[in-house]
Structures are given as C-alpha cells and as structure tokens.
Image (cartoon, rainbow, N blue to C red):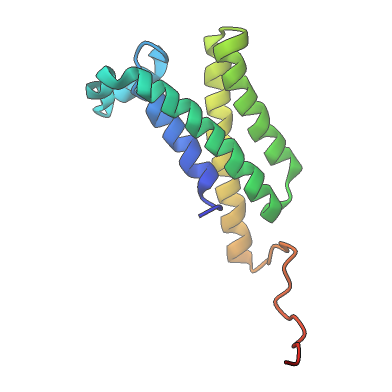
Length: 138
C-alpha cells in the first residue's frame, strides 16, 4: 500500500481539485467534462480533501524514497507540495498551484515508471531488510 500512496494522493488531489470550480477554475473544466460538476455543492469539503490528499501524496513520496533512494524525485515532490500550499496561502498564485499539482502528478508517474523498470529488469531495490537472517537456536 505504501508504494501506491503517492499515486493515490496525487491523483486524488487532482480529482478533488477538479470538482472545485471556484477554487481551481482551470481544473473545473476537466471536472465538468468528467461529470464532477455535480459535486459543486460539496466544494468546501473537496477543497479540504484536495489539501489532505496533497499531504498524503508528499508522505507517500517520503515513504517511497526509502525504497528507490532517488533524492531528486523526493525533492521535486516536496517542492511541488510546497508550491501548492504556498500558492494557496502565501502568494495567492494560481499558476503556482497548478505547477505544484503538475509536479506531483509528474513525480508520481516518474516513480511508477522507475518502479516498473526496476521490476522488469530484475534489479532488486535494497530496502535495508535482510532476507537471510541467521537462525537463532531456541
């Protein structure tokens, strides 16, 4: 589950944001095209859900870092999360918010592609756990 946490968080945040036409008007077009316009009455709850899912996505990237050890990917994910919250609360920049969303989606997709490439090439990722522990006599 922890390997999919960043993907669920990123995609969920974008979907929740697409259902908020006033908060994220450019994503609202995608939301309306996919039938999420009916959720407009729950906009304040979806706005909170989008923020929670962004935090889940960043947390998922932190947990995924312990498997893939790619610092640049973790750094980009954290920077994207900071961009979303910074755009929402500090700078009030719509472009910064959308850049943060895009960054989270790109880092999640890149993580998934790296994970798939490692799986198909037979490269094992060392997560610090040894499978061949010595037997302890009882």
